[in-house]
Length: 317
Image (tube, rainbow, N blue to C red; front, side, top):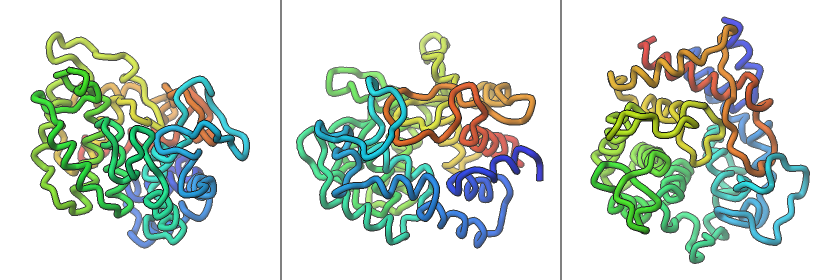
């Protein structure tokens, strides 16, 4: 086993089980045993323990006004907070927490019964109005076995002519947003895997084509880089698009690598450090319950894991 894999396996169970599955081809029973530990210890257990009255931080998308953390928190209190129910469930999904674990089921039941959106008081798994939020809610709901067919139907009707989605469409925008599109695609893929009642494959492929025709980060009109922040890799991504998230999403579809990904893949390859690891580069400011990494400019297990599995997929290893 090489030094980088050994280093990855020294991380949290949420990292270890994905390394075993995606990089070492470990037996299924070994992967499952490590995955089960996510709800029992480490980051997963810590997040589950922070739920109160069916929610995190007293709110669906944002903390309630009277919420006060029960312990230390980290991050910029002036930026968008990542402590409420939506980002916490999104992170638990990223960790790969076992949806069948009794403690996880209890947490999800609490959200279904008690969490309501700030927009107009809608029940959490019925969604609200913004595609980026609803895409994340579909991903969470489908992953945890909740009914999200109504949100999916809405998203299918909101797909724009260029193939993507945009939270600003209700304000007249006719061009898609990379941020909104990746959030919706992530949700539709999870919904498709869960066997949802609506056919979403065609819409999903149109959304993927929106990204591919732009090489994952360029303007269709000029070929210029849309946003240089997308060339820096984050975790958690929250709702913010970047090239590594786009590539890891496309890998997760199971499709063969598209030739239009060459430039994006080479960007990932070029960011590999001399020791074989990737750095955390662009942490999105805002309150979190705890740090998952040592900070920007430091080696990142999450980015290293995701970059290695993207390259393994692309190179056909």
